[in-house]
Image 1: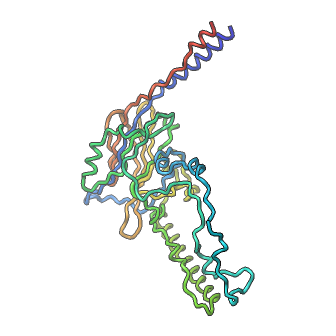
Image 2: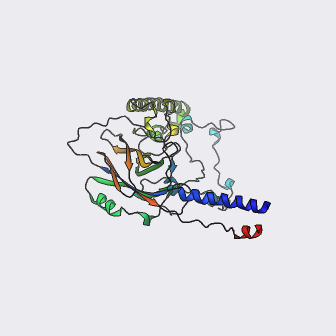
Image 3: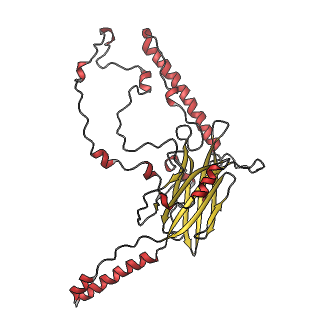
Amino acid sequence: MSKAVSCSFISAALFSTVLHAQEQRWFEVEMLIFSQTPPASLQENFGDAVTAIKPGRAYDLVTPLLQPDLSSLLAELPLCHNSLQPEDEYQFTQALSAQLCIVERQPHSWQLTNLFEPRRSYDKVPYPAALPAVVTGSGVHTNKPYLAERASLQLTDIASKITRSAGTQLLLHTSWRQAPVTERRAIASRWFSGKNYSEQFDYWGQPVADITTESAPRTTDSTDLISDDLVAANDVSAHQVMSNIDMLLQQLNANSQLPDTAESAIDTPVHSDSLTSRNLPDQVWQLDGLFKLHLDHYLFVNTEFNLRLPAQDNSLQTIYVRQSRRVISGEIHYLDHPHLGIILQIRRYEPPAEEEPELNDATNTSQ
């Protein structure tokens, strides 16, 4: 009797699990994002302030493609062989006049820069200078959002027209699958594409200072090496301090209108005391932002993107675009903006059927 009761409980639990999987609705989202040149008659001024978009808890489906986990690969690499020649075979004998102390002091200017690159172990692939517009994955079904395969793209004709149109640039064409939840439980996904401006500009659009050039040591006279090194070091330090002050003032002027409320984040509140660089993306992309899909009787999408454009004053202008829209599955929707266009199609998706557990053995045992 106890075996029959236990088997009935197991059957009920398995049935409820299968029923829950059937009730969970999955959708396939295809999205195209492109930049466009606004008409000359446009009078709207978008301002110079930069609105920070923090990823927070957002799903990141792009970074795993660019920076795969290399830990297992690095663990299998063989150890580097020792040099065939001993290190002490090639040593230069110092002149007696230069041996002023037991451990010879390096000139101060040498200490300001690393003459020899330190040995590093790279466990991540560096980001490229630009990303391709089409972003797809393997399409293997999981229980969380994942990239769809390239064959799932159904808006390729529209993407081709955008590519051929004058004044437009296709930045992103992707497709992914997810099961939407209510707005309160929904988590955004992060998307970035286009050029990588990290080497030229910081997140706020200001030019990155060339510290290597500023701190390069000056040539000195061998007759008065120590005194000249001190003078050179002081000159370099003073110049770098003034440069850092100028850069800080530029950042303060550029971000004097930063919001201090939660209006600049889709998924998590952002407070004024948390607007720090550690919470911002470490790469400056041409397009970077968030997309959130939620289901409350109807489907809704919330988008928040920063589009970066090089300006004439040697800075990086940021166009902030935030939009919300109720959408209907199967239809093509267009979210228009003078600088940025978004085309969406959200289709119902039926996940592959999971193999139901065999209950015959358990039933036979109970009998």
